[in-house]
Length: 290
Image 1 (cartoon, rainbow, N blue to C red):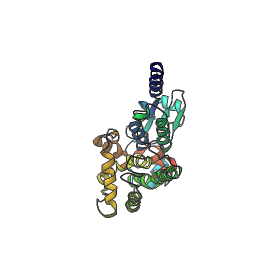
Image 2 (image 1 turned 180 degrees about the vertical axis):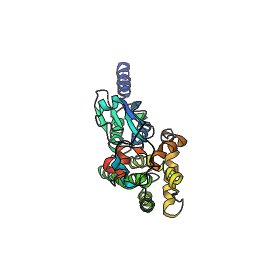
Image 3 (image 1 turned 90 degrees about the vertical axis):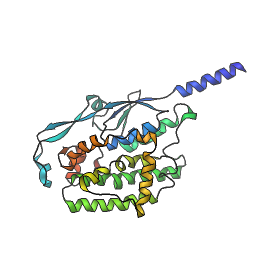
Image 4 (image 1 turned 180 degrees about the horizontal axis):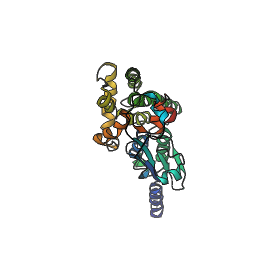
């Protein structure tokens, strides 16, 4: 009996020890990467990661006269992305977030990384320590939440760049009015405190990096999301999410982020997302590295 018990304990500790360690290529300012950061923070007992800061900015004279076609842009030098050579080795497109496992296999695209971390956590570490999955196990509910992630990406995240990067005030205002309607829809569709119930879920993680940055719109564009009527539930949702330690500890410093995003607000950021939006394409068509 004692030998059996000892063997059971050894097996249990072996199972608990199998915690994967990922190399996480990220950037402190990037809301797309922030999705992976929240998923990793949420599942930190089951999945470990080593953060590698992989994007920076450098000043260069503008290279592309065509990107000025929109008008209303400042004439000073522009900011361009610098990318870590290790990131480019792991992912030649240089996209963040990129997660690399111990076998050197890379996973990227922000929505995919949320699911990847969630699936890894479900089979790693001590089962007693695991957080509730971000995606429900029921197939129909899981499908609903995956559709919601995609909808959040298109409707709630992309307009942020239109409001920051496009120079026409009417176009910016129209994007904000549509955003308010879509935020109200998100709030109404929740199944509990959060989107899929009373614990944090994948659609929440998909939206949070933007929802927690909407203070930028107030700061630079004077666009305020009112805490009343149809939007009251949104503010309740956001307060509940930001009160979770696993979310709160992932938030970038506000003053530092305001300074960073000023480059978009004054149209000087030269990155794939900014350039796509400036040329009239939606950010979600090229959800890359901002």
